[in-house]
Length: 268
Image (cartoon, rainbow, N blue to C red; front, side, top):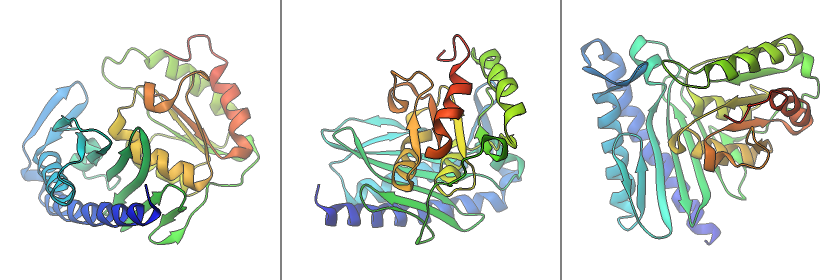
């Protein structure tokens, strides 16, 4: 794909993210009036999610009607080549509880290669963006993964499983092994922002199991362009296949990965 096309696609994704952010901010101010339903234990959806995804779909497919689509709330529209992968509201529980840590996530994939990634946080006025080969940016300024080389001073992010997820015990063992060796672990409730924070150097690394494509697609582009190392807990796997993400600044990745991969059954 020509570089000029990537530039146009990134501009479209940024425009769509801003529009979606406006929809979400409207609902954020009126969130006590939202009707909430439950997909499964601990997994909620409201009209804020569905209306925002409709806005994203209208904007992105309105501009590129032959593209494919994968959205958390509306599913898949198959197409050859290009497809948009979106999460209209990553961190729905935070949003509904009035916790200002949630985001819009938009990625563009072309023939299986993720080319564009945008994570937009309307509450904080922060937009993380990247295109393949073009670098990663926060509100237009270049961003890079941290240069921390000390595990003892490192700060990591994760997503703790909830409800009846079958990997709760494995994740608890991860935390028990890692916590004594580092400066802290944060569970903030929005994987797209966690990945963006690693790309921006705010976190030194992140890991989580069983994420969905819309949770990680944009973040993987940000991480790649910001210079982070990206893998899966299983070294023979890939995050986009399994949804199991292990990422850190290169100066810490090997040591971080060794701690988390030490457990038998870490790949479950």
